[in-house]
Image (cartoon, rainbow, N blue to C red; front, top):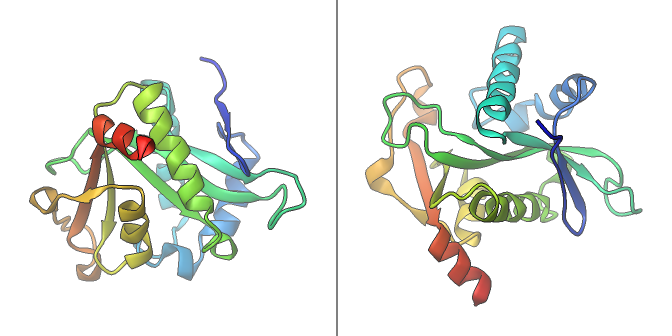
Length: 192
């Protein structure tokens, strides 16, 4: 399998390296970043997340990739920002199980700079043009307004009929709300 690397104006999205894992958790396993993700991850949760991300890459040719700021003198130049990319929705028994999903998780000092939007646009472009998906979803919770706000900025639409509950999650993280965009809608958006 070839190594994945994709560049945008300010960012590099790439496959994980062994040395990325400790730094990723150091930057993103914080109360602020993990607030809407079930709180800070313990060692078992970290190991399970790593296994899922590596499995997506092996099975589907994509995962949530590392996002780094290009070393260009800009804000957080050369730094790891977090991850963004594509995976398959793993909410077994949910209406969206196994659908292509775009997602992101960035360190707190990278918020509000447009990095998540830039990485998500690249991921959606790849999802439709390279991986050939007809529709891509995104998941969050109602309380996470910055997340669903970005989904709306990307042209995604709320799909309330696909919202679902997960009894393994605390009440404030239920229900999971679903947004989606089709390849046709993405193409129309790009042509506006």
